[in-house]
Image (cartoon, rainbow, N blue to C red; front, side, top):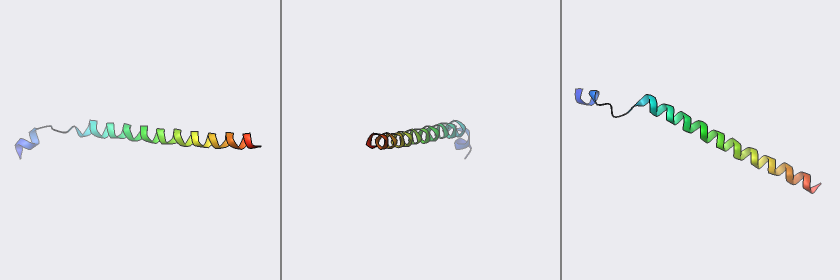
Length: 49
């Protein structure tokens, strides 16, 4: 087991940081798309009136 303990194959700190950044970017993109969808609906309602 000492061989596996001494080999640093995974940097868990950097991995969790990158996964966190990826999650934040995905949430931001979803919110942007939802915001665009809601704005389009409001414009269609104004044009119909």
